[in-house]
Length: 301
Image (cartoon, rainbow, N blue to C red):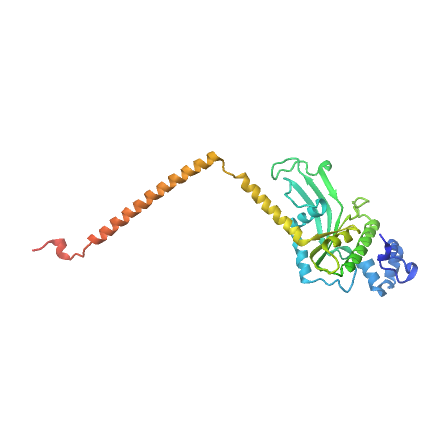
């Protein structure tokens, strides 16, 4: 990547050099922080200490938050993973497991950071029966995924591209210099999937296809929200159709059902006739009923 897209250090030993050079020199960075020099340069301080990139257009809108909140649902995260890794959603094979951790507002302003991704299948095809899930020969691990969300993207997309390229370079640098915690391996998968999730794109100078191609040159994958959930809807419809096909009635079964229906109709007609007879008897009893006085019971003298 061209380091000219990175912010430059405006002071000290690395003045005029990309900020990653300062990040890599942890002793000098600590000295600048402890002496208060770093705090005088908010942009550099935010990147080096807070791991954030602040620009005038970074304010999060309610629409942005709604899109982000969709991925509080693990199933939506799985659908996104399948779209990113396999370029499809589709029916998930039986007993396929997805493990991951999902963080909002991750390092360097990534709206969603998906880490510790493992996809594996149980050896047993029986539902909810796991046998040897954690065997290394059937467990597939994937690099972390960094995602940026834009509810609306227009002709200002070059600004978004520049910001994401900066985020990518800083993120790669962070993974490179990060010291492993006690008990962790001395290596870590560097994110290899960088995604821009867009709800609406409306530009006068660029088509969707061109936008995808432009971002792809920087290894950034664009996914449109409507396509993501349209695919999900198609999956649901497909599953419903398959379920319907599974209960298609055999001609022999159809004949048996018709006979049963005929018998039920006959019983219903008999019940209706019986009800009619009872109603007539009740009506007759009512018409025969007469008021009586005491002479009717004791006779006439």
